[in-house]
Every structure is written in C-alpha cells, then in structure tokens.
Length: 114
Length: 116
Image 1 (cartoon, each protein chain N blue to C red):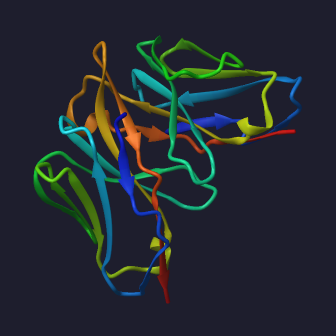
Image 2 (cartoon, helix red, strand yellow):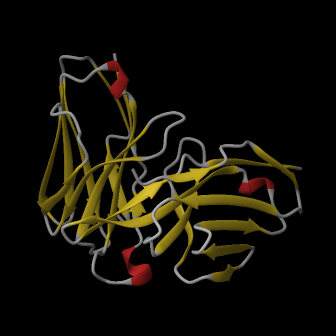
C-alpha cells in the first residue's frame, strides 16, 4: 500500500514567519511531487511541483525534495493570513498498464495568526 | 467557461434516488478523474479515464457508475447510495504523456453530496 504521510496539524504561525510543511512517501520509485492548497469548502489548487532533488522556488514558496530520505517539504516565507488553508502533498506513482495516479496525503492545516 | 467545471455544486438525495454528476474540462486534456473527499480522510481516487478509456477503478462500489462519452466530459451516475457516501466529489483532468509539469492534475470546484 503506497502511502503519503503528512502531519495533520493544525500548524499555527504568526504573520510574517516561515511556515514549514512536511511530507514523506513510501514508494521509492516516485518521480513527481505536487503541493496543492485547499481553502475550506473549495477544491485543491496547484501551488507547485518538483521533480529533482534540491530546492525549487516560486515567489514566497519553496519546495524541497530529498529522494534518498523520501521526503518533500514546502516552505512559505512571509506567511500571510490568506495562506491559512489545508496543504495537500501528492505523489505521482505508476499504477500499472501504462497508467499513473496521484496519491494524496491527508493534508496539513495551516493557520497564520495576524 | 475555463478550466474544469462541475454541476451541480450541491446535491441532496435520498437513498433510493438516481442522480448524475457532470464534469467538463476546457483544457484540451486527455485524462479525467473522479475523486471522493471525506472529512479527515485523504482524497480517494475513484476512477480514471485516459483517452476515454477507463484505466482505473479503485474498488469502487457498483452504486457509482462512471461514463466518459468524450475526452472533455465525464459523468458519475449515482444510485441507491448510502449516507456514508456523503462527501465532496471532485473531478480533475490532466494531459497524460505530456511529460513533466504538463501532467499536473487540475481540479473542478466539486459537488457537495448529502445522502439522506
């Protein structure tokens, strides 16, 4: 059973601080990793993806990947109250017969305190 | 319309009703997905269609019946549902085979389903 694990939180950080969200995965062969943000009552929206070991930056967001440790993280710099949401980690995995699927973690709820 | 749309946005049905959820993607993608999202559980993949052919059926009860008439439209037919089927049903699409970021899944707004 392929698993994606996230701390469910809630993670509370003060406005302007760095929020660090973590995710581990069980399938060592996984190649692609995605972070989605989901506001309460809304659908998930893509924040960023990462494929290579190391860091990838996009504005206030930085994704970090360590395939040897099977670990991916998302850093949010200068956190804003509007960043308060649930963050979903998703891992793209081969499911057989030429098909791939995303396996999602349960999500980490982030609360940014003004 | 842009992106992925879903109708209806909210649905209340009795256990003996038959209803259908509709999804349409305007992104030119070749793969579409149905997910179920329940409280305190991760997103559960239900069905995958790739080039209109069903490629995944993750042990979903037969009371859920998907239909994909073309690569832009996806339906989920519901009949004799149970109260535990109440959840947010999400549709997504992607361009499989594009490689890299092109294979990102994009979600519709979802249908909030309540089974009484």
